Length: 360
Image (cartoon, rainbow, N blue to C red; front, side, top):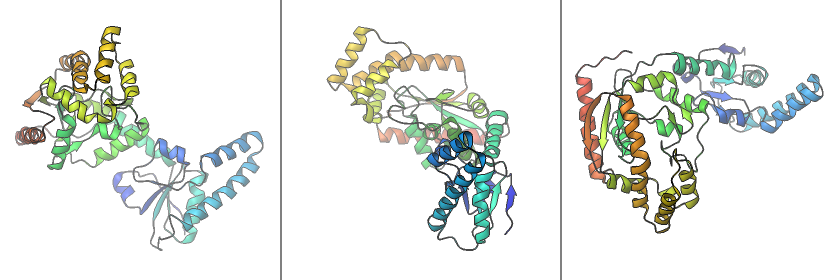
């Protein structure tokens, strides 16, 4: 059966294939991959390094011979494993780094089995060029409303409630695997920038441009991951809904939300050391004493007052974005969260009913 070639990596085109097979090494796959792809490597990381070393230090011919044997062995394993239950109608898309030897080796064998096999021309690089073009050079035909408010105001919980209630939401912190604050990434590994962008583009493609999208107000970086320019432009011009909560209530909420961190003294010390303005010795000793005494709500309130609130207030004055409304709540009270979500839903509904522009 003849191999087919494609350069179409749109969501609709990818959905026409029964499986998207990434034959690159696990390390390459972990850095980034086409959304929904399954990693069936023809060379693992160690084998790829071995073949590369032979190519550089010995000969191209020997590298090809050794590589071919490894590829044949690995493809056989996939045929007997991940692909063993596929019938004659199976139609996969196969890609490697640049549409070269690895993808063609796998695709040739799959085609000989009798499966209608397509190779992504240009490989992963073709896909990555589209991501870059759309997120860095393109325009997004989406309208956003942002949930804003001081740290601990419960923005993440309200966003989740809005999504559960049927509104379109974009969870940037979830995609970046970071809770968006000084303590947000401790003990967690974020995806690479490329993988974050792949996840983001897939999420954006799933949104209806005719409806408002709700997201949390974020800085241009979430942990170490940068929000791409095309999205940042839309977020920067979006109206806000301000969630307002008293500082003691926000402190109680933060202690509950960051329960995995507040009891970890090493994590707390790491966070103290990452503050933009390092605290004085007296203040640091006081914070440590509060942690030793288990007075985490008092510690959280001190951090909010001295670090988070001033930083938020400076950013808000600089942004000068329009505000749709202000909603007061107790973020540690589920009933108050529910009422706040209902109020936010009404504000967003009024925005749509007002006929706000739908095109960029």
